[in-house]
Image (cartoon, rainbow, N blue to C red; front, top):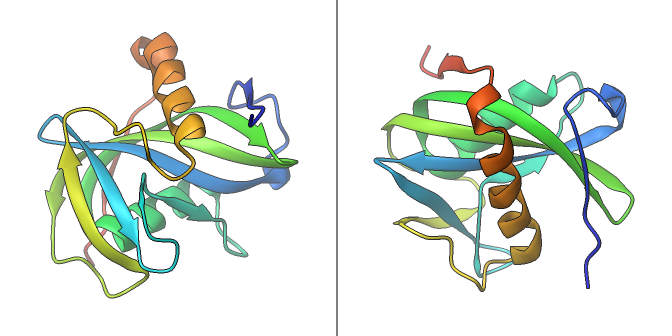
Length: 146
């Protein structure tokens, strides 16, 4: 079974945080994505690119994987598994445009996260942790259009 450790957003040095995952909702439904390469459904997220802040990674990945161009987002914790660290974000998507032509085959909106998600144990853990901290979040409004 996958061992997941949980930390506050300031407990792990920034340079060690290499992934961002985004628990996103649009019209009160979770946004899940189908990756062309892996198959199966998952929540948006990905690897931090050189020169990015982890917040920029989260915003870029949310746009690339869902087409979200206007949203409110907040970090709410850091997870670790397999010796890597990722920052967990929550997002309330306001506006979605056409899905960019990246690695995502399809997006879907669901009321409840399916049990059989890729990395499902991690994503369900992130959902539980969000419930513990959601009243204390520091939201940022993002608009991806130029």
